[in-house]
Structures are given as C-alpha cells and as structure tokens.
Image 1: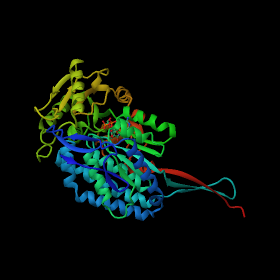
Image 2: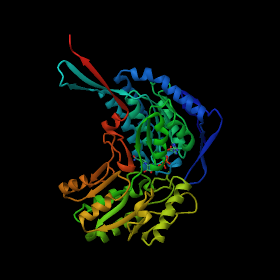
Image 3: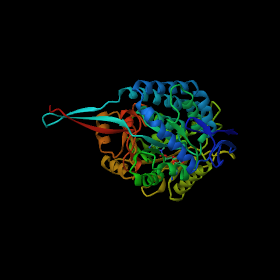
Length: 478
Ligand code: NAD
C-alpha cells in the first residue's frame, strides 16, 4: 500500500485529526493507497497558506511565473511512464493509453507558461475628451480547485496551470477515489525551483466534507470545479453567500450526428476510441448516436467489430485497451443503466455484462432501438455503453440532439463541411467538432452550456477565467 501525506504551505503533513482514507485498485479490488482525510482545521490552514503566498506570487514578473510552469512541465514529461503506471493501478486506465493524457498534462503547463508571459489589458478610447479608460487583467486571489476522478492527473494539471499562470494561489482537492495520483502531481509541483511555499496546496479528503468546506470558505475567492452537475449545483450554493467566481465543467450527453456521406473510417476510429477509451468515463464521450438510416446497419455492424476488438483486462498489461471502471460504486451505477435499457425494451447488440470475477470490469456495450424516454437515452451513463438511434429528417435530428438538459459537446460527420458548420451553429453546445470527436488540446477552450457548465477551461479563454478585469480611469486634464 502506498501511503502519502498532503501538501500545505510547502510541508508534507497528515490531517490534524490523524484520520485517513484509503483508495482501491479497481482491477484487483485490493487497497491501493492511504491519504489524509482533511477536516475544517486542515482546510483553514491550507486556505491561510494560499492567502499568505498570494502577495509574493502575484507580484512575480510574468517571465518568472512562466519559467516555473515550464519546469513543472519538464518534470511531468520526465516522469510520464511512472505517472501512467500509477494511473493504471489507482484509476484503471490502461498504462499504454495513460501516456497520452500525462503528456497532455505537461502540454497544459507549457501552454500556460506562454500565456503567463502574454497577460495584458486593453486601452479604451473614450467619447469624452481628455479621459482615457484602460482595463487591466489581474489575478483573482485564492482559488479552490476541485478535481473529478475520471482523468485525475490531466484535469488537476490543467486547473493548476491556468490558475497559477495568472498569479493566483490555490488549494486543490483531488478526487477521493484516486488521491494518490493527485499527491504525485503535488510532489512534482513541490519539487521545482522558485515556486514559493503556499502557492499550491493539495489537500485530500471526501468531497462532501473537504470539498464543501473549501467551496464555502470565506478565504476562497473563486472555485474551479470539474465534476457532475449535481455536485456543481451544491458547490454553487456553497459559493453563493460570499459571491465567489465559479468555473463549472460538468456532465454531458453528447450527440454524434452521422450523415450518409460521413468518412466512415474516421467516425468509427474516433467514436469507437472515445466510447471505450477510459471505459467511456469522459465528459465528452459520445452519449447519443444519430446515424442516418441509409448507413445505420453498416455503422452498427462496424462499431460492433470495434467493441469486439477491445482487450479487457489488467490495465498495466501492454495489450490491454480497456481497464476496469474506476470504482465498485460507479460500475454498479453503469450496470443499473444497462439493466434499465434492457428492461425498457432497447435492443442489446453486444456486451451488457460484467467481465471476469474480480475487479470492476464491464463489457463494451451497444444498444439500438432506443426510444427518447429511456433512461439510457436521456442520462449521462459515463460508461462503455453506446446508445445508437437513427434519423432521416435533418430538422428532426436537430430537435432531438438539442432536446437534453446538457449542452457540452457534439460531433458532426459529413464530407460537406459547410453543411456541418451550419448545423453546428444550431446545436446548443459549448463546443462541436466536424469529422472528429473530442479534439481537445491545451490551446483549445473547452466547456459547456446549460447544465454542462459555466466558463471555459483551456486556451486563452480558459486563462481569462482565472483573472479579474480591473478598470482604470485617467483624467488627462492639466
Ligand atoms: P463528482 O461530482 O462526484 O466529484 C468531483 C469532485 O467533487 C471530487 O473531488 C469530489 O470529491 C468532489 N465533491 C463531491 N461532493 C462535493 C461537495 N458536496 N462539495 C464539494 N466537492 C464535492 O464527479 P466525478 O464523479 O468525480 O466525475 C464525473 C463527472 O464529472 C461526470 O458528470 C463528468 O461528465 C464530469 N466531468 C466533466 C468534465 C468537463 O470538462 N465538462 C470533465 C471531466 C468530468
């Protein structure tokens, strides 16, 4: 078992209470890690440390901050193999595939290092003679960063990078399910030259307690959250009394609309990957397929072939393409969606069962004959479950695609790009892709509308979420 302490004010500490929580290897069901379980005193100490570090860090030259971020990126790249191995054991992501998001985490620090040099304001010419207005971009202060379990290293890296690049300080809460991965990133951050103590504090503990104490803490100025819509609602409530700025990256039920002239090989490769990669435990994974009736049979047959090719098993083995679900609880939730699909009359094409007698494995699963009132059609399943419907009228498919409380992302598959762009304009989503699904990158802002969130993460727009605009008025009268 790996035992780790948490990082407060540059020191590695236990919880004041001495309480701990344990994490589990989802492939073996054995206890994997033990980390501190923080309570109010720990949260208070971490927030106080971040507040004390703010004046020094926010006053550092932009180039200085940029250099620190680049150092973190280099250390992540150097340790990518070790990180992917850790993620395979505590998260269940196949080690071979875990390498990509780990490098992506480094890429986020590198991109933020560029943005750190480029922060600037704007000059506004006034209609009034002899008055000049400017606005400056300034850091917000202390940010609470609350991370989900589905891509714990990548998402924690992205949030820290954006936040500290602009001169903010932070208290980060990794997901309780895979806290050891979060503390590994804390070790890397703590090991770089020139990062003052208290700029990045990482505290572990259960969401309902540690996360809630952070989101409601009067010493916290902003909350960056990625996770479920339900938790997002309670965080917004906790943040409301002190009017904290919030950035919310929440759930999705993402449509993939496939036209008769779709580049089929690209669609199958990309959608198949995002459906089964990480067991579908990704906010942007395809949630609802709308396949044109003229190619429906071919698409289902070929996606079924993709499902059959998945190698399920030990995530540390090089041949594995699908590991276990992250936890017993989440595997149970996904299985109950599969059972609801069967009971409500959807056609189970493949899968639908647990795999093996140990670990939280679920077979890659495909449903057709799905009706609009079924739970598998409406809810975010967050599992390796493809929900496929068909269409032949474009206005009707647009209505169906927009008929959901989420609005995260969508993909449109056709060789007629102009047509795809026109359709995409009418989709109520924060981002859509043409002939690709979930084409995320550090320079690309990501984020949803409606119950999928508020604000963007990544890219220059994501950086701006971690700044305030300060207005400056200058009277030029002499
Ligand atoms: P979750 O909401 O259960 O937990 C997320 C984090 O919030 C964890 O650190 C958890 O400990 C903490 N938390 C839980 N209850 C809390 C509370 N009351 N107050 C404060 N913090 C609390 O989410 P999850 O199950 O870890 O992640 C899966 C969800 O995240 C899915 O809905 C997925 O779509 C979403 N997600 C969205 C994006 C995006 O960019 N939009 C990216 C990844 C995941």
